[in-house]
Length: 121
Length: 121
Image (cartoon, rainbow over all chains, first blue to last red; front, side, top):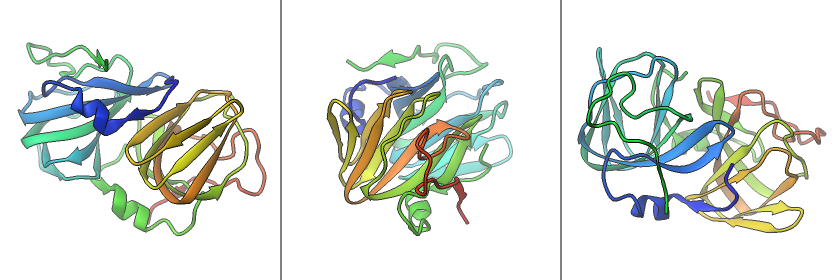
C-alpha cells in the first residue's frame, strides 16, 4: 500500500547507482520498483516468479539463452518464471520492474551483484 | 506470462473507447492493463485488493471521500483495498492499471459501466 503520490521520474532521479532496485509502490504483496541499468548484469533466473520489465528510457537487451529481446521506451517484456536471462543496457536505461515482494535482483545466481530492495528517501 | 514485447503506446492506440481496460501483460496472477479515461467514472471500491494507477498522459483526479488526489504524467497512486474512489479525467487520460487477475473496473458497485477485461488484438 502507498498512501501518497509517487512520481516515477523524481524517484529515478534519487537512485544513485545502476542495478539497485528501489521500491516505488506496492500493490498487495507485489512491488513496483524503479531501477537504473547500465552495462551487462549476470545470468540468472527466478524459479518462482515471472518478472516484468517496463523501459522508460534507453535501450535494453534482455538476453535469453535462445534469443535476444530488444526493448526501447514504453516497451514491456515479461521474463517467464524459471527462464534464464541476462539484461544488457546500452548506456543508461531507466526501467520499472513488477514482481512479488521478496524477489531478489540476482534470482538464483546470488553473488556480489545482489542488491537488497532499497527504499526511496 | 507474456511471450513477446508489448509497446504501451501502440497498445493504447488500439483501445477504442474510454473505461475499457485492455490487458497489456500478466505477471503470475496479476494483470497490467492499459486504459483510457475521460470524464467521471462511478464511485466504487475493491474490497479485496489494492489498485495501482500509473498516469502516462493527461490529468487525472482520483476522488476519495476525504480528499482529491491529483495525478499527472509519470505519477503513480495506489488506492488501498476497500477505499471508495471515483476517477475523474480532465479530458483524455492514458494510464496503466496493476491489479490481480479478475479485478473488475467497477469493483463492488457494478452497473452499466462494468467492462470485462479486453484483450489487445
